[in-house]
Image (cartoon, rainbow, N blue to C red; front, side, top):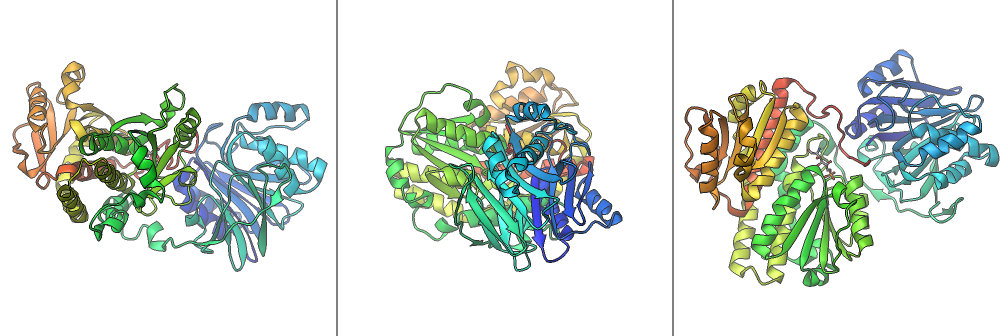
Length: 615
Ligand code: M6R
């Protein structure tokens, strides 16, 4: 959460900072601010979004050759101008700081600094960093050293950029537990939370590592690692050329990123499956060179994830049990990390995360390792993320940047990867014949086309969306492997339309939630033509008999016909193992169109942010 950018160049950097903040706004959008050096530090902050900040900057004619900027997702202190970054310390020669992350020991440091005479003007943990740097600067008189000393005292996760009024010719940046990268440009040097913010200036990117502190000036940079030594040792970090395309991060002809990302799913899934679509068989090497060795010892899977990624894990459990005969637990990462589970060295722990930055997922994986789980696999969409870096085995979904806060193409590409894993394990455990493997590969080859077909229900979904927009609550029902899809549909609807939506395994209805059913409670059901269809139809009758209004997404061969209070949208014929992936599409479209009807901020729903880097 929170996006930071810094720039130091031979020209006014304000346009670079503002453009970068727009790209980073998905990380938080509670308030925004920047500081530039121009005869002293000039700061502009607002509780509005980046567009508001741009207006203020234009009015105030703010310009400078060096600056740092921030877009906030509030953790400590309400979203207000006072709490917006950058935060200052000092009066004669001020320090300015922007920060992404959480400083866990901020209270102890605050107390110490208050006793030394520092005055705090905000409720944030970030202001503690500004004062701490100022305090240490009194002793070492060099900002770089002062930052190195300060980060050694910080506990928690942070990516920071720091400037000093007396020495505007440099920016100091540091990372620990939150992403930060340097852009090496021809006319300047930059630092930001992600690559998309820097593409406007350069494709030459350095990914800072944990404990790195960097000094940037307009013609270069130096990096030290403060991991083992307070004052750091110089380190070399490789420059990578980013191949992220501009189209991947631009909206193009779409109204929202979520819409773009829903419609990108055929190509996102095709890209993710590229390695297997032309192959005759699926090999363990897809997951890393050690995969075959590790998989051969694996007798249980533990999946750790949050939100939508957790739902992907729940779908995978059905596949792993049914196709690979592999037992599997799926745990919400924020719960797992505080339990006392029993470790087993033959368990493969899988972390699923779009961003690879989710604090709870990262912590749960570290905890699993500490408990004695030897092997882990990351399924992730961001190549340089912390999750990918810390895993033994990895599979990169190739969905391209997902910018809308509601996760869409990340989910379907996670499912595609988890199906590949299922097939791999099933083969190794002799649970899958060559013929069956070929059938699954053929179905996967057809998946992008099938997804394209599923998207064609949009006009019918739009009609349903009009009546949903009038409701305050909704129930989602599914059975078997489609129960997590119902959970995902409910999450999408509540997240972007603010309609209270709950998912139930349809068999659970009569154990309580049926009491909620009346004409004001729309009930969405996922009705694939699988072995549980008969059971589901009985559950739908229970709703119908009580005057409930049903909205059913049915396979063409499910034989459910429309009648009074029973609305049906028909998909293609049952797609077997791929059915949960295809049934996801209309639910995403439903949430999107209900949100449009309600006029909510689809890509930036209230109170949320894309990458949840705090607990
Ligand atoms: O980046 P991750 O996949 O780890 O994110 C996990 C959740 O925060 C995320 O899926 C969240 O639930 C989505 N906004 C849902 O659409």
